[in-house]
Amino acid sequence: MTMTHATRLLDWYDRHRRTLPWRAPAGKRSAPYLVWLSEIMLQQTTVATVGDYFHRFVKRWPTVEALAGAPIDEVLSAWAGLGYYARARNLHACARAVTEQHGGVFPRGEADLLALPGIGPYTAAAIRAIAFDEPASAVDGNVERVVARLFAIETPLPDAKAEINLRAAALVPQRRAGDYAQAMMDLGATVCTPRSPRCVICPLMAGCSARKRGIAEELPRRAPKAERPTRRGLAFVLTRRDGAVLLRKRPTKGLLGGMDEVPSSDWREGTLSIVEALKQAPVPARWKVLDGGIRHTFTHFHLELAVAHAVAATSGLAKLAPGSAWCTVDQMTERALPTVMRKVIEHAAKG
Image (tube, rainbow, N blue to C red):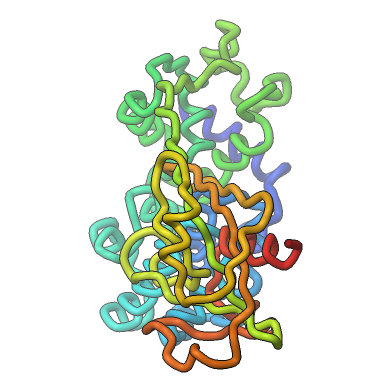
C-alpha cells in the first residue's frame, strides 16, 4: 500500500465520515479527554450502546478533573450496564492520575500514556493520533480486519497480530494521522465488514489482495476458541414490605469489583444442589426457589443462576452482614448494579 492509498482513504473519509458524539467536526481535533473517555467505553462495546453513556458522562463530568473528583461509587453506578467493570475503576484511577501527576492535561508521549491506569497500546495510539495528530498506529478490531484483507494475511488471530501491527504501522501517513486513524475505523465498521464486505464501494478495492483472491470474507481467520464453561449458583432476593431489596458490595478486586449485588451462593461448575446452596442464604428466612432462572455470559464463562425469594421478617435483621444494605426501588438506578443482578431482581419480581 502506498501513500496514494492513504490519500484515497482520506478522500473517502472526507465524504463519508460518521458523525459520532465524541468526534470533532471536520478540520478540528477532539479534546484528549473526550478521545480517552470514548475509547475506554468502546472497548468490547458497540458504538450504538456507548452513545448515551458518553453523553451522560460528559454532562455530569465535563472535564478529567471533575471525573477525578467523583466518588468511585457514582462512577460505577453511571457505568452500570456497559459491562467489564474493571474499565470503570481504571477510568476513575486514570482521571485521578492525570489530574494529580499531569495537572489535568493528558500527556502526548507514548510512554507517559502507557503508564496511566487502563491505557494499553491501542488506546495510547488512538489518543496520540486523534487528539494530537501524531503518526501513531491505532489497531482495533476494525483495523485488524482491513489490514488482514489488504495484505491477504491468512495466519489465524491471535498469531497474526504481530504482522498486522507491522503492516498497519507502515501505512500511517505523517499528515492527518488522526483523520486516517478514524478513517480506517470507519472503513472497517461500514464497508469492510465482517460479513458481506461491500468491496465494490471500497476506496482501497484496487489494492486489496484478499478481494483479488476472492477470500475477503474469510479473513481474518481466527484460531478456534475454547468453549466457555458454565457456572451455576443460587441468588437470594430478600425484600422488605416496602419493596426494598437487600444488596451487598462485591470485593474491590476481581469480577464485577466494587459493584453491588444480590447475595448468592458460590458460582461453581457442575450440577447445582439447591439444598446445599440454600445453606449460604444471607439470613434465615422462608426462602422460595422460583421457577426458571437467569443466564448471563461473561468473557470467560456462562453463568446460570436459580433465584430464591423471601420477604424479610420485621425482626431478626437488625444486624446485617458488613457491606450489606437495603436499597429502595427509587434508589435502584443510583446503585452500581451490574446487568446480571438487574436480571435477577427482575426475575424475582415476576416470580
